[in-house]
Image (cartoon, rainbow, N blue to C red; front, side):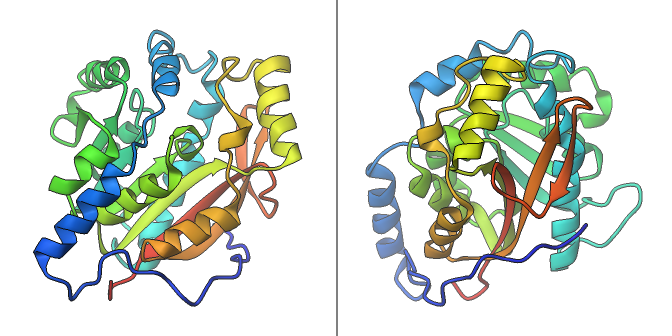
Length: 285
């Protein structure tokens, strides 16, 4: 995979909870952080839950999301290999790796990650999609014990699952949550020290509005109308700033390019519309 220039990092990272504070203080701070709000946008959950009947139609309205999978799996696999968490293995490169897939929907990304060895937990705030994910996974006996789905939110899941995962994946989710800062904080808290956060999302630019909303939703009908809200799109610089306040250091930022004629995704040096970000949790937090 090609590496692209990382956006300038900030040298000062605010520590939400100091490593040297007592466990009682840490719990108090964490509970107060979560009490500030919720990551859930009820309208978004309802909207995506209604797509459960067509979620696994690779030629339907989610075909662009399905075709993104080769790039997403490569991103996670190579990212973990580059950090030394996993060793290259041709058949099961993610064997022994614990991955949390947040906003997993019907399991489009969870399943292929599990098939190459990962122990995956997928969470989503839509019960309809979690039920669908469970049903679809049950059709493949090879996934038994490798992928589990839970109907919950990241802020509800995190307290009992702090520092349990080698990787957290938030793919095409950040642009749909109500509180992006809280969301990324909870993502960080579930990671082991040295673990990786993998994000794919949409930049907040005029081209992203034209491409992801005008073209994709209204002209080409690549995704259902109303899927995106441009006000929730977020720049790579802002994501980088937020993850650094949560104790993570940005390692890579890739642009992602979609070809609607071929229904194919590729890496790009341009992150003006879609991009992927890989950040690592500092071992000294």
